[in-house]
Picture (cartoon, rainbow, N blue to C red):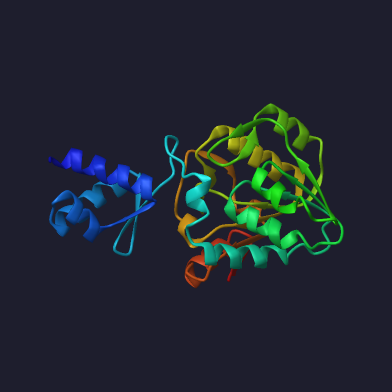
Length: 253
């Protein structure tokens, strides 16, 4: 197996599993650990993998996006803490936008006990999490449903969202970068997120530390657009200060 074929196999495995490690790759591909590390460096330089301790994770690009199933199994504890902290930031808001993704769905679960709230969302899982909440009115945006994320996009969703004024939006991103802002692989998803940013008075960004320093295909907002960023404790205090210098308060939970 030559280097190009081996690197292609590594990328396929990373995208299928979400994360790969040097030891398992070496055993599976019959290559030395240093050879695998060299392959990972090549793939990181291409922007398709990101190094983590002991291995690498797949970067979401215009041609690859993780599905709802994987998102529901990765960093679940961190996402629950983020959701709880974010939900505590309502500060009297009566209308809320919930983005697609697993963390916003967890925020929906946190908001289910609210006495009086209107939630606008493109996410079917978030709407379902709130469906039995007597105090919550759910407005589900229409449009084409994306199977990977179970959320709606396109002009029906944009038209409905464009007619609303929302108190606070909880948004996620596939990539968060000080230089390139908030990004996501799909232009249709980016358009919905961008409209939510535009129509919301307050905006709170939620995401695990793994999203930072990553850039995907389509930018939908910049870091200063947000009043707060809620992430987990693995995000370094030093990096948090660098993001706070751009405007938002960073909460590490």
